[in-house]
Amino acid sequence: MSMNRTEIVAAIADRAGLTKTQADAALGAFQEVLIDSLSKGEAVKVTGLMSVERVERAARTGRNPRTGEEIQIPAGYGVKLTAGSTLKKAVSNK
Image 1 (cartoon, rainbow, N blue to C red):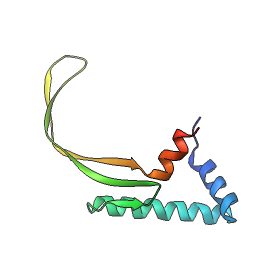
Image 2 (cartoon, helix red, strand yellow):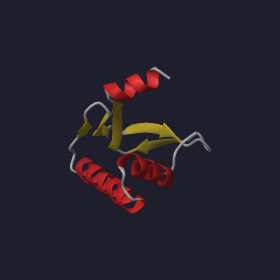
Image 3 (tube, one colour):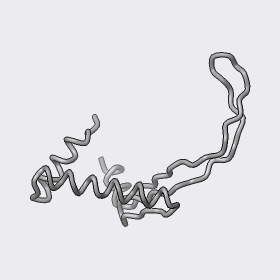
Image 4 (tube, rainbow, N blue to C red):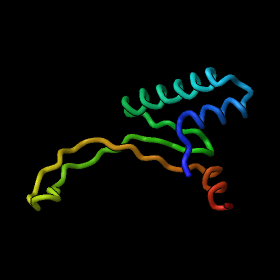
């Protein structure tokens, strides 16, 4: 089971005593801060919950699954998310 944005906003609003509009604005602001920081190459750390950082991916050779032909995949960036201690404990106890 997974939660979509609407369900997350409703849960945040309920737990924080906010309206859904306020909770959606807070979640949107967090999303913007995360994207802005990662695009600048800065890591984002929420102690106990997670850390998110931009990582470099080297150029590599891949294969076209349809034809089997080798293709060159250019270097680029990815995102690495590491769970914090509180999140790890919550997951391992259930």
